[in-house]
Amino acid sequence: MNISTLKKRLKEALIWIIIITVASNVISYLRKPSLSSDMLPSIKMAMIDGRIFDSKMVEGKPLILHFWGVWCPVCKMEASNIQTLSEKYTVITIAVNSESNEEIREYMQKNGLDFDVINDEEGNLAKRFNVEVFPTTFIYDGKGKLRFSETGYTTTAGLLSRMAIVK
Image: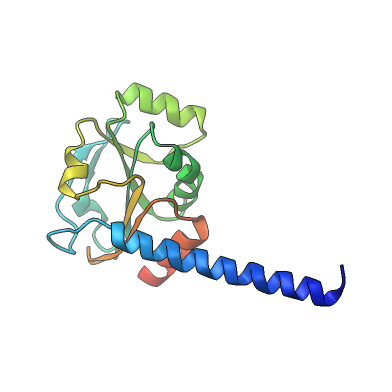
């Protein structure tokens, strides 16, 4: 393969990457939940480890709320990205319609995950946030204002770049 052919293929690959990136962002925008407010609502719920999450405890810090399910193949693909973010930022995940706390713990142990999880067995919290697509991620700034919402798979780099803006 000569240099000219290589340059042409690299250019085509770059164009496709740009097209896919733009298309996925447009789709995510169109599928994002409509919320009644862009401010973080009060949430006080038990997590699967027995601790209580209270949204007032994270005031002044950015917060990632991530809705997922153990039954969701895309969520499973994205789980390592969420794990990476949870090691640097406050991440609360909501396992929707995902059976018992014990089954979620087993799933997480099997997949090497240890981020914080609220078990939304009946999907009530998901309904409160109008989440219909999984996974869905909301990123709030330190003042509790919604800055980003993503539906579907999001890369670690994409999530980290959003968090860099939110800080």
